[in-house]
Image (cartoon, rainbow, N blue to C red; front, side, top):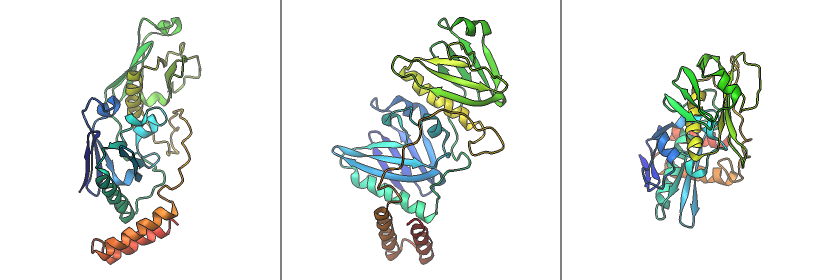
Length: 294
């Protein structure tokens, strides 16, 4: 088993599951602590890298598109420090981090895990019930239905509509727009049969967001829990859940499919085979998988 234990948290890998446990230290982002322990199956992993720095470095885990509802919900909306799939590595732990990366990468090759999109969620969303408090009200999700209660700051149209309650089966998607500058953000529930598209401050299916850090934390968990219980985006039989998000960045040069990186992996496989760690059959299968990626 490979393990990296630092002030930021602990990552362990047993060949099948990569287990992520955030530290309870005051310096660790509260969102990671709220999310708690995360168990990532190897089948959900697309790649892993260690980035050395002047004072330590950083482990980054890349998941397959569509494998994790939390990643789908939070992409482009949370900071690096809040990302559970990054780990700040203390100075002096570089060797341990690099060994950890090698172990995960070798397992990906041996098990021939595809790095393309997943057609189903391979990880569960956060547990419920969950509540997110916005600027003009509070939304609660218990896994089967939603409830929206308004507060003193609500506009007249929402106040007149009263509290909102609707089942999960009537929800066709969610829209999370974070606040920007002086502009409020919002959390909109797109309910089946509701054709109106009112401004967020007037829409009874919409919470205003004022951009508070606590709002972002709870919204990320809330949306992830909702998406995990809606049809997967790859499903053709049901409407695709709507979640406006920034376009994903293009993969950086020198990633897992970089020719130099693949050559290094090939040499590592040869060393493992020579040392008797891999059998002839395992070495052949892993080598062919690598060669197909050139």
